[in-house]
Amino acid sequence: MKLLIVEDEEEIVEAISLAFKIRWPEAEIISTRYGKKRVELVASQQPDIVILDLGLPDIRGFDTLRNIREFSNVPIIIVTVSSEETDIIKGLEWGADDYIIKPFKPAGN
Image 1 (cartoon, one colour):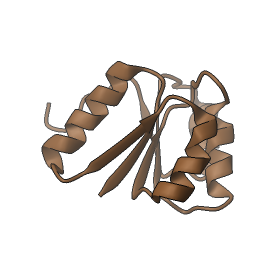
Image 2 (cartoon, one colour):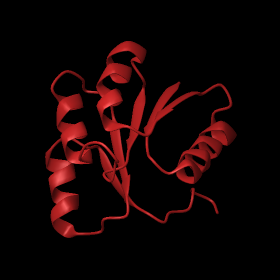
Image 3 (spheres, one colour):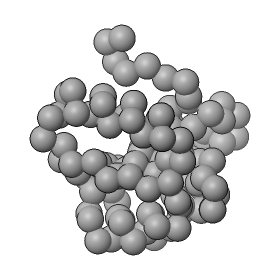
Image 4 (spheres, rainbow, N blue to C red):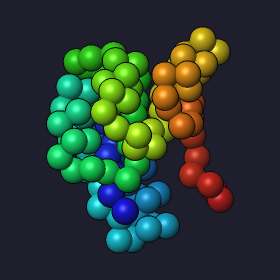
């Protein structure tokens, strides 16, 4: 399994990485804090899943979602602090497979 994390907070990257490594020790984890790099990584690395934050320092997360959906059907899970109903609807309508609001706890904790 290959996971791409698009997230600008290192602590969140570490938490998600740890959760995946505990459940899937063989998982390969790639991360970037920049939304612009995500298209290159999705195309070149062909991850099995993308974890996407909406609050990126260089580009809106919704633009990142739309750009990935232009060429890939990779499962995308939005993980963000925005709990606005309009953002949740927009994220799912634009092609996200799930929408998780921070802070979150891994299952079983």
